[in-house]
Image (cartoon, rainbow, N blue to C red; front, side, top):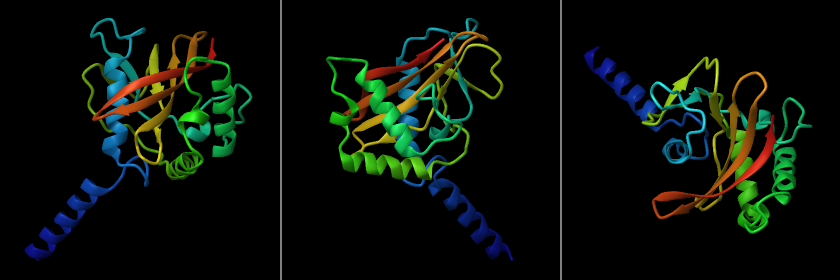
Length: 193
């Protein structure tokens, strides 16, 4: 009986270690690394004044519900979101490469696979310059799970800021990998209020 419990314990432990929380396609460690990097390295516009930490909503924004276009229906598919991303990108960052130049057709196919395998979950990381909050009542940030290129050297994610009842905004954030670190390539404005 003791051996049976030991085997069950080991199987459950191994399953927890190797199972993916956010996606069946991308390792959690890669997703966490870029989100934590972004939180730690970006300007703290609306931080918790007591602790100087960003308030982060505890759950990722689901890509199918991300408000990339103000004309978005409640839930969208990858094709709709991709077209909305491309359209918003055409209006900004004239000197930077467009996402259609950064990401190839096979990258977009790979991103669609990630989009469709996204899990409804909670963030599972520790951050020095932020706090995960399940009920933020004032200024807070929300992020989607990043979508990666096939070679995992480029990533794009949705970022939203909620202020008080009449202010907020959203951006698409594009990062490029430089060795082990990530470098912010551009931020594509989506909407502001």
